[in-house]
Image (cartoon, rainbow, N blue to C red):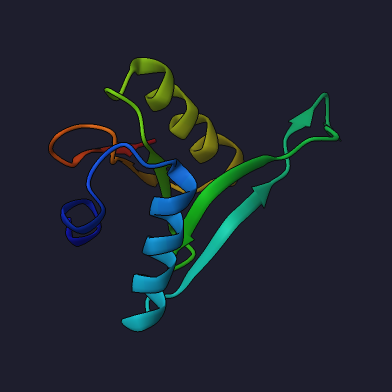
Length: 107
């Protein structure tokens, strides 16, 4: 919420991710940015992985958006990350609305 109130809405996702990374580092939150997850088809790895914005404490996927509203397609994307990562929880945070919005999704 601090990031949204400080930066406001309308910036690119990358700006919010950079700010989140700064905050995570300041308070010693264990995270990995742009974590790659292999996608398999017919038992073989596909060439292009899924890339999640952040993985927090090796257990939570954090997906950052800067869009007018969270849509079902954004929820489906984060659920797909859970499916390929074998993790169980994702947080979808949207900085593109007047008030910060978020969704918690569990697989």
